[in-house]
Image 1: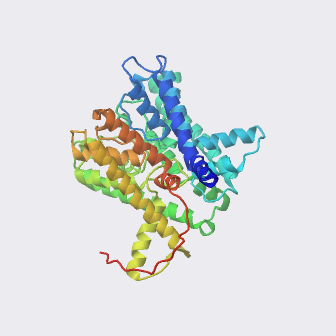
Image 2: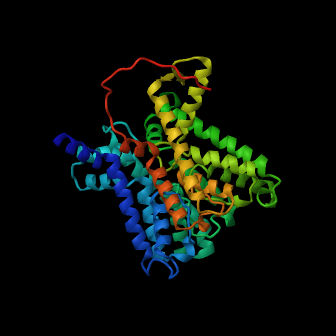
Image 3: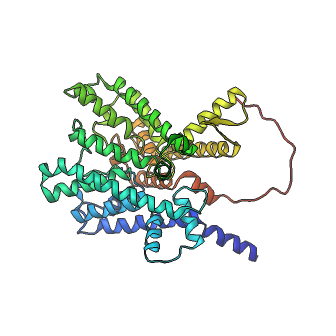
Length: 445
């Protein structure tokens, strides 16, 4: 009986469970703060505030009310705070505070921090925390200063500064929240806004482990295998999406075809090529895009960015290992080889589990949401994939969801931010089989 009680307590207070609880508490507190009269307009309901808080903490960017007009300056500051906390990680800020106060961070807290940063060990966590904070605040400060050159002449010093700071925070954390009702569509041909915003979410989407490795080594040959996979995979996905988006939408009068110059079309193609990998901003209307472009965007949203980053999705490294495993199967190789390194079966099994679980969660979420949603099926699929990848792009279905549909999207955003494997490790039990069985054969394919 005592051993059972210990097992229950150990599961209840496991690091993934504590991490999920902390995020849930911040969503509830954020919802209450956004619902108060000084934060939002009178017509904003608690359901609206809860959805906004969940979207901010999970750095998704899906909205049911207009952020710029339906929330006051205080409400917008609360949203920016939730984005920053959710993007960089709640335990990251806690670890920084403990360090500044000279307090010791115990092993239980290190285990929670390890899960939040997507690491496998605890030896260099505090060094990584310092990298996260330094890179985030430096990048956001520089981006704010650059964006002020655009927003200050248009809105004045005070409002222009806030516009620049809010969008810098939202972009670096891959949140996709904008104070404009049409996101950044009004700046579709502005090179300063397009390049600054995209560089922010590409930088943070690489993952802080990669950034720390680049800063430490500064030589391609000395980089870790993970960094090489992330850099090459990110570059490949961006170039592929950039070219394909331009080809598919070039003559569409509702998107690229409606822009005045080829330079604007190329710039808009660049922005739409990189934003689906969990950034969430848009300079063109995704509801007006070709079906082929929508399908490509769905795939990019599911892939996402890198581990230990502000991005969601199954991650770029997962896609690469999955492709390598498929290639190795056809070549009848037992190990995966790339960049002079090999990957074993444990990595392949983890990738297969993550991919299968992600597909299952998206399918279940789509089914549940479709039971009450009466609109276009492709629009709903787009919203579900956007929620799971914590992207924030929308074709308009989010605003048409009822309370049940909103709850489903919130749950998907929550799982997408924590990570499917974190949820699985929380629910699973580790045990060794007491009985061995002879091998059997199953016919596949």
